[in-house]
Length: 390
Image (cartoon, rainbow, N blue to C red):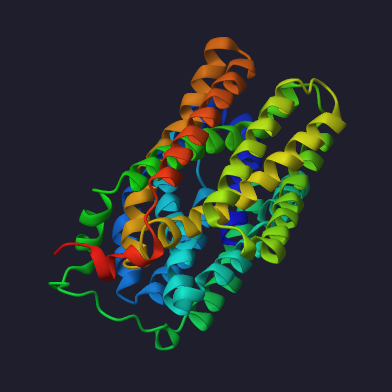
């Protein structure tokens, strides 16, 4: 519900809002840039706070903030107000989505976090499946403003209570304190990974990948309309992404325990690139677009799992929240810039064809950087607790 209400609802709401307020596409997606930039800047302090056991407070308050801002968004009448509100929504996203959730799950389950992260992403995969058609239905029936009121209510009435109930710091797995920790475990862990080539490979790979992915995701509704599909077909195609994510994650859940996270990641990134290539040639064909979004959704669903497992399986299991926050920071900056840059590229060419070409090149770069990280990965026994210098 956090993903569906705070993230996947944006393209549908933005299209309807832009028509009513007369806002151009670059102006609309500039707000998404502001929101994701705020989320990126907040990723490290939020991750470090969860490492200290504040996951319940962070995720609960994040839903309170998100619900309030969605309701406030429904009353907006100007671009500056929209941008201000979306900056706050970016903070709510940083407090409630996968990054904090993965950190909470890792604190709870320790070395068994892989199963927990995979299970979490299985349910998260339904976000687009449920909320894209739900948001479109609400917009069609009651308008975009009242649709936002409903989305805000989801956060207040459901997410707040669930986070407060299930996140219990008393149940977290206790981890031995790192030797010679000197107090600032998070800072020491970050200094250690910054000297590891695998970290930089992961950073480049995830930064390029998520910048490209978010740029396309925010524009996919309009992109598919441009390629000759009706609004109903577009919603149906977008609704395929969620089941494809879930199906791919089920495969990883059942068979993936036999494979390393990096092997799964390489396969998923290659499949995503093939899905992009298929989308480039899918003009007016719902079948081709549906196949492309299925491959794309399945691959991205698996990459989300790999993103959650990369730090503990390729670097270290210590200070997960802090390290993940640093790893997420440039990726979130790329996410912040991507919607507006994509809108600018479309405005320059008045076509999404150049956008798809840039996306395909970016996918290739992401694969190469991930290969580099795999070649330089740390061994599990060389985790920070045993090998990092003070």
